[in-house]
Each structure stands twice: as structure tokens, then as C-alpha cells.
Length: 98
Image 1 (cartoon, rainbow, N blue to C red):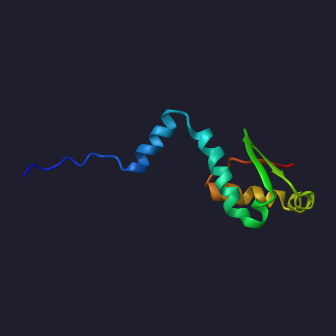
Image 2: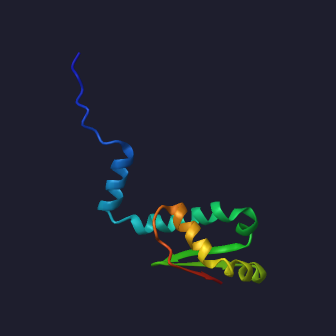
Image 3: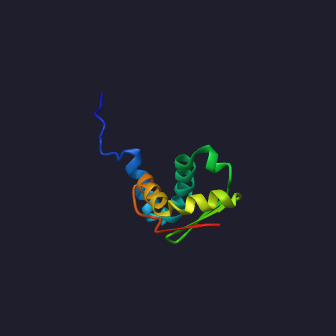
């Protein structure tokens, strides 16, 4: 039986290379930010979240409750830090609650 050559990339390295070569990082960051928000904020806050949009380094979150918007605004920097930590890199520098 012939031996196989084991010069293969693992799948995660191949995907990272593909994303980098095709400049898909910004689009994936937008998706990952939405997932991170849903995961970190939980069902209570997600229920009042109507839209999440990442533009450059600013995250815009539209909330249907003005009381919740006011409450979250007090922990603005902590939310940014938690989201960036979840994402593994600094993507968000500013959070705008609408």
C-alpha cells in the first residue's frame, strides 16, 4: 500500500486563509457581533432588541424600550468590553443605543 502525503491544511486554517484572501472579515464581524450580543445580553434584553448594526467601529442597537435603553446606557463601556472580549478582538469602540 502506498503512503499518503500528509501536507494538508486543517480546515480552520484553510477557512482563515479563504476569509483573509477574499476580504470577508468585515462581513463576518457584523454577523459575529449580532451573535455575541444575543449570547451576552440574554433573552430578557433580546426580546426588546429590534435591530443591531455595525458600521466601522460603532455598534448601533435599536431597542423598543426606552427604560431599558436608559438602563443599558449606564453600563455602556462595560458592554463594549464584554462584546470585544467575546469576539476575541477590538471591533467595537462606540455603542449607540437608539
